[in-house]
Length: 542
Image (cartoon, rainbow, N blue to C red):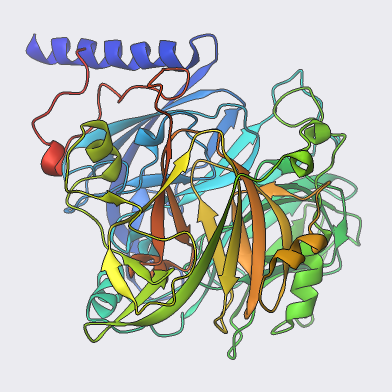
């Protein structure tokens, strides 16, 4: 009887939140069990993180404005969290699934994420955000389809494939974490996976004469990857929720944390063709392959893998600049994507972020504006909500590079709701960077080599820059983005170079509204887990 009462209380809580986020919109339920299991992606037995026994995890299929109810059972012997790369969690950073916003799911327990893909379309992915779990799996694709009445700027494809690519280690994730905890750098990865498999193990079947959509996400740990298909061109149609000008490419650079959608027409002779993926900007080039299989194929893959760029930066920079928004296409709403004229809005604040590597107390660390992030004992969003003092300090990271010696802090930057800000990512290092901001998409208005100055704004694309949530910054270069801060919450801004993220190259952007209205931010979920100094407090009555 008590058990049935508990279930009824949870259902009441769930449907109460559904009413809050939009009861008129459809909802989809998912039951996930997270376990360890043996995997052999590079031919070596490893301990992988499985979701419902799958590696990679299952795809999430959804439509704009759907409510996603994802009940995650943590069957691992340690705490676990999942984050949703690119899902904006409108007015609801409590559900973001990073430690700064959400308490970990304890071993043997479950937590129900209640998400709404509000006003979004496109291709994204989820991943485990705690510790170094990302190096063990637990990731999968997210696709958000347009509502039936919203026109899409290309015909329905004959098929729609998720392709998850990423560099990979044969070392156990705990071993990698221990290396980092000792203040050392990780070795070079051992290989590249395509949908969790090594060379030629993944296959995608097509029918000659038909066109297919490939949703390509780089779910790896550090390396930019180049994607290409033997004998076939790719037409780019969507980048992280934005319909793009339909430009044709023979190969595509996908930087870590990024997602792209391309159309590929099976217009070649009926046989099998290589799909090649290789690392970019590395001395040693890692390469893997999969198979594009024609259903009436008369011969297997043959010949050398199609060649691709290796260390050439100009090739990648020019390609990045060629990716533009399709201004006449509809996004998640019927109005054209170009109806929001971001280039005519006055900037209210400029933030410059410089990444650095160094040592603190004799251990390797990474920083933003000299601050190397250390987690607090309580998720920052919960500390903010319950007004728990001493967990973090607003302004603990400057909004310009300070030139100071690197130091440790729980870095949180304050920002005003509805501000329109310019962020300049400055990369003085010789590596390529990839930056992601939870809760938002931003317009990538400019990128170039050298040092950014105010005169660099003369190079900005103020008309049809692509709007996305993850952008690259080339070595010794800068990238500038515009962001309309219209989503109240505590949002993680991080490098997607995962060892650097783990060792401090991240911070939280607190977008604040003093009004305290449900129009600006939803109240704390009734089922929110409470930990650290928030333990023992109450959310809201069921």
